[in-house]
Image (cartoon, rainbow, N blue to C red; front, top):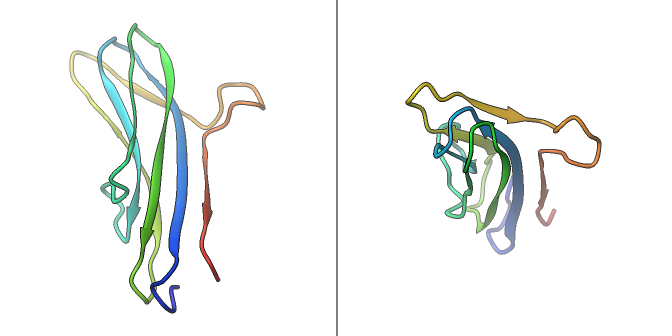
Amino acid sequence: MVGVSEDVVKLYFTAHGSHSVAGYARANGVGLDITNGDSSGRPGFHASPTNNAGGAGTAYFEKLVAAGFHFLQLVEYSETGGGSTATWWGDVGVTYVQSGAVGYMMG
């Protein structure tokens, strides 16, 4: 809930993943009041250089938001084709590498 549109709302979303086939890309973003697209304008991106290569991208949402009720949605997108499948990881099997988001807004 935003009372007065004068402070920037921030949310940073890092997502780890891989593709089974080299050359396919994955992107992650932050949707403002939508669940099927990126509103950040600065989505995270990673293309797998080799089969099953892992990597991470970080999306940066930093915008003034109009007064009223809003929600931010974490979104992921994967290219498909050539028998490629994408895998998104919450973690990589270790405690010190995690996917997730952190945000800030004045309240």
